Length: 77
Image (tube, rainbow, N blue to C red; front, side, top):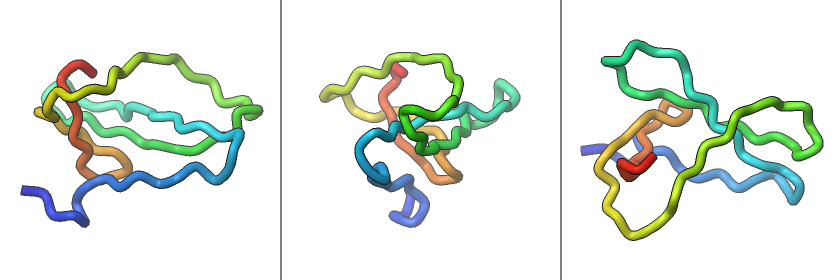
């Protein structure tokens, strides 16, 4: 079981006009999915491709690494 130190903790955005960008790190198919979550100003020139994640009541049954910490998510991602 994960300890609180092992789990990803939400960090507020610096101020209004910023967004979070999740970058999926390259890996082999058998490895745990590892991502990096960074903050960018909306006016920055960060390029990205978007995908959708729906929130809801379904239980978190999967996990991945975000900034080296465990993040629990539902299988619909």
